Length: 150
Image (tube, rainbow, N blue to C red; front, side):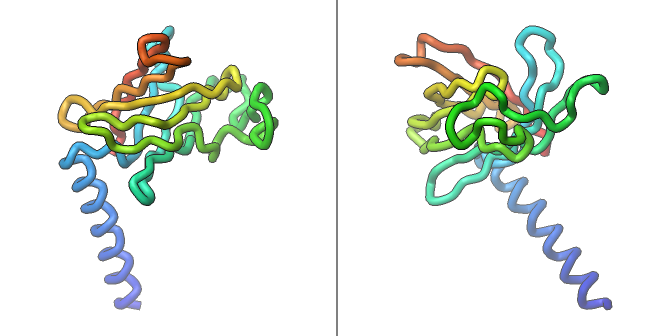
C-alpha cells in the first residue's frame, strides 16, 4: 500500500515538473483556455501536446450555458469529423517549430466546421499563446489569445 502511494505521488510530481518545464522554456505544450472574441468569456480548454516535433491540440472541456447541449457534436464538420463529439476532438495539428513561431499546421473551428491554416506564438513568458487561423496568407485571418491554465 505504501509503495502505491509513493509511486502515485512520484508520478504526480514528475507530471507537474514536466508541465512547469514546458512553461519555463516557452513551449506551447500544456492546457490552454481560449476566449470568445465577441463576449470575452472562456469557450474551451485545449490540451496541446507534442509528438515527434509536431503539435496537436485537443478540446478537453467546453464552457457552455446550462441551457445548451453540454457535449455537442460537430454538425458542420465534414468527412470523418461530421457529427463527432467536440469534446475530445483534435482541432489543432501539424504545427512545427520555426524560430519563435510554430507554423505549417491547421486549426478547425467546430462552430462552422471550417479548417484553416494556422500558426502560433508563445508570448508573455509562456503565459499566453497567440493562435492565428487564416486562409491563404497569414495576413488574411484572425488571431485569438489563449491563456495558460497550468
